[in-house]
Image (cartoon, rainbow, N blue to C red):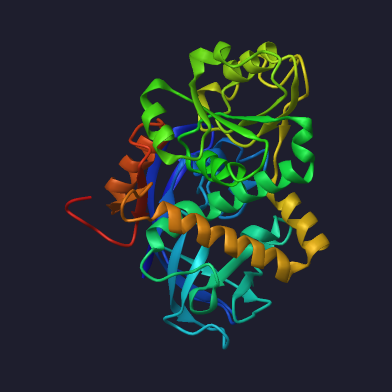
Length: 371
């Protein structure tokens, strides 16, 4: 057997190649999984953009200098097992390389999940090393795997951003400015914040995405990037930056004299990540990177793991019911099967092109003439 991977040039994210290698024999306690499908969103581009700074390249090392595998979220099936607690055929949700298969070293088994105990992952954030066993996973629902892969990791971040802001009394602000408002993490955050009393949720987006953002119903106002002056300059506000666009961040910091907090979530606008002055020497509060695992750790300590899980599961099912409403679904999945199709889909997502209602589901273990 062999494994096909999509490798990305770390210093030039647009450069990719397909790599196929013969599988090595499993060691005792290991399992091999077939990665059936995974989502590719701007969130994964953020993983690549911050790959060195935040250790994302370390999860699935390519073994080749200068090349990496971007972590993705999706579903896999156990096809070979030398672990007595993980049977062949078991379905798993979790964090994978962009590949047709991978090897895990399961430990800390419970009915709901286990942890990959591979030595190179020991120092990496634990939240990314957990694999959820679909048969007992409270977030799993059969028949919606595509939407789960697309939205689940992003919504958990969205839910945590909202919780972090509420935990800090929204830093005294009454308006939340969310950039890249058509992105999945932004509208998941808006969905949560929209329920908060006394908070106006303002989506910032490009003219092409205004209608989409307005159709969701979770933004109180949608404003184009070139119309910031339509928002009063003295508004007590928080900026939640999903775009990583340095020019936009500068404009917001310079316009809003009553900016209470500036939160950087990720970089969907890769070409702007290194924009001059981005995050440095700006008026107002210093832009602060939001790191979801830190909020998870805080809340699991305060609430306990069971209560944390209960709240998150309830929020997720509420969100899923809205997003998958047959009358007005927020998202539909587009499948890309096989190496060439996966490369093309990656290039499309990297370039930030496409309809915000379309979510990309990829597979390197399937081939399709239709792509």
